[in-house]
Length: 243
Image (cartoon, rainbow, N blue to C red; front, side, top):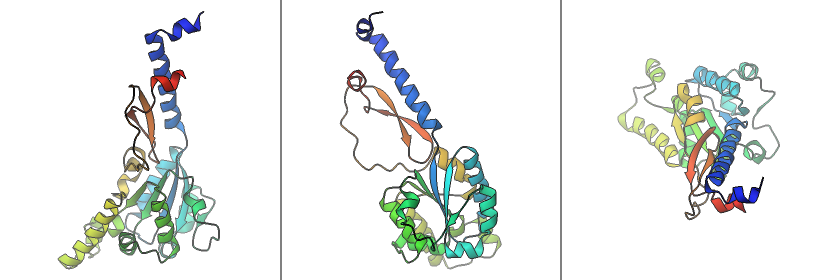
């Protein structure tokens, strides 16, 4: 078999390149996904959040958990740990550098977001360990999803609890805070949709412009943190494969 003759055949080269792309896509789809999950003290949406985190774990996601002081007071930490089979939940008493919590993560999840936490993040206030951690993750370009139920003035549970009687201006302030998070590139979703958004939706953070278009071969690129593979033009070229 004369390999050199095969490599001069356009159909063979196209088939080879397609096989390489298919293998890249398969490996990207099957690799473990890692996420940092931050809990603040919002009880609204907690049950749905936990169910969705269990669903992510069943799909092979590796979760690192961090709890604020408010979360430790309001949420059942032992139940979370047992349900998710997590060895440790980090908090402000942890003395290791915060970068160790997010440096290898593909996604940051704000799992139970309070009105207070949403307001602080919207205004860039970092006055506790969790808001500082989230700030560092955002500045590092970690794609972020915020479960908004606990901070949403129009949430149905909040309405049933009588929490929908604020003045229009106060309600609008809460809406604006969530919108500001969206403006920052944070994907705000409802608790019931968390697993779906993590796997198939959410923002794509680009840290550098795409290279200028070259000779046309389609390649696979993974959306960080969401387990989603999309097709991107002009990233792998024929010359890249052949050289």
